[in-house]
Image 1 (spheres, one colour):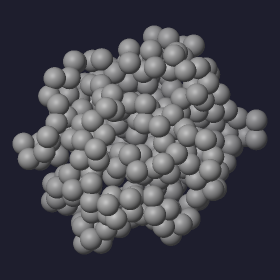
Image 2 (cartoon, helix red, strand yellow):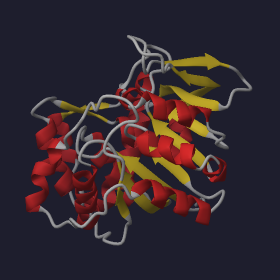
Image 3 (cartoon, one colour):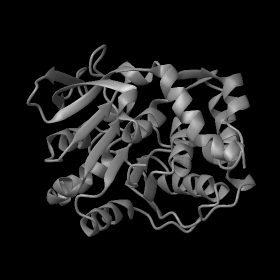
Image 4 (tube, one colour):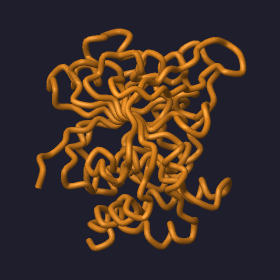
Length: 295
């Protein structure tokens, strides 16, 4: 078996349900050393409580969880609340999270383990953008930067890069050793209906996740596994095909504000997924997380 991968997860858990589905995967993945979880965007402390509830349901009370930036950099807040936090009264969780502690935690953790950490960002990129702006050298100390965000081939806007375009611009211009993006072009192909999700997401942390999912199912009758695909790509990159090039983010005000452009270039600094084996992904995901259902 390949060596363990230290992972920091930066997430907006509590809005789209796929963040919680992603966290459950990382908790089950035997090759993942989950070094910490940081939360971002509206009500980040309540999002931290949700992350803690999921971790505790998996028997992982020792995962560091930090609350991060509550609003984008110079941009309107798109998701001021964490609607799935309504499940919190029914699940044990911490509630003593220090506000705005995530960026310093990320900086300190990455600097303590140079060349080791994979930073997986699956929400608006405020925490990461602020981190790289305050301490540009930290980007070079990562092993890998992985994001779920962007729309590289079929469109230009998405929720995560568009949620904080200035922070996204800082990220894509940072000097990371490796940056891999999983955009809507591929993640939209990994979709499962609500009834099948209810049947298959069982045991351990999925008991919390299923309750959170019922809040989500009031708006959608499916889950798109955006964030879990990006997480799985860390450990099984062959689930996707990739193109190398350069990603730029438009930060000029107007209709194109936050739009993402990808230019193919064999010498470019960025890799983006362009195709996915969706059946292979679901097989991998449920094989890894079967540890909860079989417990």
